[in-house]
Length: 170
Image 1 (cartoon, helix red, strand yellow):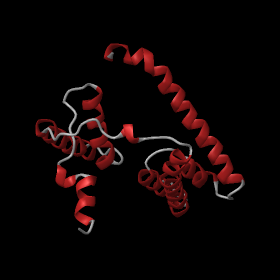
Image 2 (cartoon, rainbow, N blue to C red):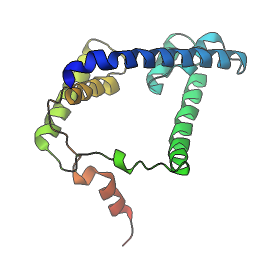
Image 3 (cartoon, rainbow, N blue to C red):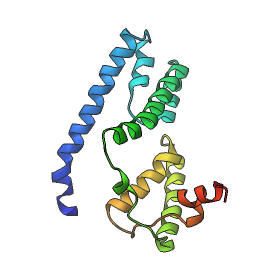
Image 4 (cartoon, rainbow, N blue to C red):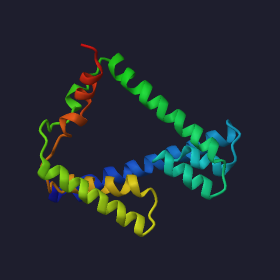
């Protein structure tokens, strides 16, 4: 129910934000004390968010952006490599997480693409950070949260299954 969203989920959101900040402070302390990084570099290395933008912020604030980039690259590598293995090893089945939409709805896909570009343009115009990621992401998230358009799949020529079919011999 969309009307109960702010009251039902806002406490979960605030708990998640607090949890992320606590993890960032613990990570900052760890990188500073154990890793020997200066406090600024340690803070940006432990920050949770888009790695590319965090590296840009670290550079703007005069910290060691190369260390920040390395830490975030290793974090992404570990998550991408270990989480799927861990889920499968523990007997988990993530097949139900595949997208529910299996048909392309051009009446949804084209407005999503156009609105994403307008949102990116706006982010660039007002000089908000990471416009190409956050602009499009926030627009698509808002459209889906408010259920303004039906869900759509990507066109078959763009989908993972079709790409693997093209690459397999025979």
